[in-house]
Image: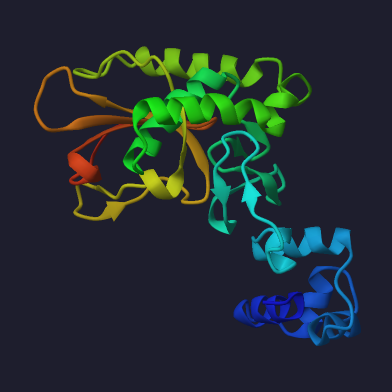
Length: 254
């Protein structure tokens, strides 16, 4: 699709008139009309506003002229998994797992490889093939080439260590000691928990990236522990295979 077709589709899909869209991105109705007629395209600053407004990448607005690759883990990206800056603007350089709300979630290349390898094995790689590929690929990506410039001097790692200590201090019966937390997108872990009154509730935002992990119970059985956390809360739950029959154990505000 061309830029004019994409802009028209996004505008009408979101129920905006040309006047309403013009007001939201600080241009005239005539400018919107010229975009949709193919006479002009939005300038760079306006493309950024449109990207944030419609929650799509600038690459998508321009008709996807290039393949987007996460510059931290090397994953091909579409609009559904692109990370976001603090103001909610899609960042075309990183996926949600590596960059969440303006924060880089990995500072250790070996840790990232350990997280990615099991997913690659599920896609048909052997473990050795996956590790070799990641060890060759990651050093070529911008995040790792510019790590000293882009990193936060260990602040996020210190935050994770503090979270891990808080989780372990809960002393949840049967849950192993937490050693690490990984980036997890809400839509993949947003389970629906039953309440005493019979209602069911979800506690997460599908679009937000959290820190979490899964553990086998020290008490045996077929239920696993799941841990999720953010700046605002710690959640501990149990569930069966594939997240079935979840039960909330702890939801603690921080």
